[in-house]
Image (cartoon, one colour):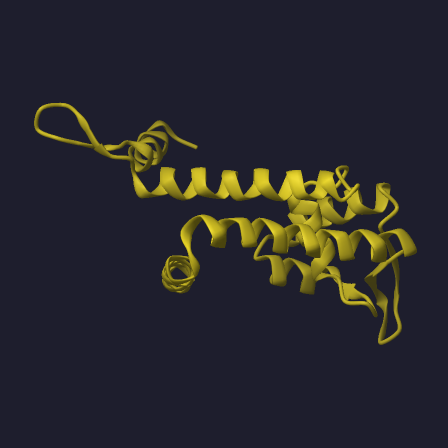
Length: 162
């Protein structure tokens, strides 16, 4: 990344400053990232409370995306909106934890399918509950109407980014 790109990226994080040099409002990108970190902390705490603290919020989310019958890596990457390479790393971590295994795709012998192990099925259920718990906490903090407006606004922003 070049110096000019770094400066532009830094500007995204700078707060709006009044004419008197006081910070008026933090930049939107910063607020979104801080909110995401807060939800991730809540999710990590919920995972720990459920006895699956070895799952990070990212691993938990990936585990929830795996269908009971198995899912191709490329499909998991699409569902998670990340690159195939990034999903491969997450699946490698889940495999090391004993939550998933790779098997031949019965429809295409050249391809692999990610399947849940017995441990993965248990962890997947707890991960789903942890994610729901974190979202419920956010909903409680904001109230039902504000929470739904926020979700709608974020979905709208995400759709324009695609």
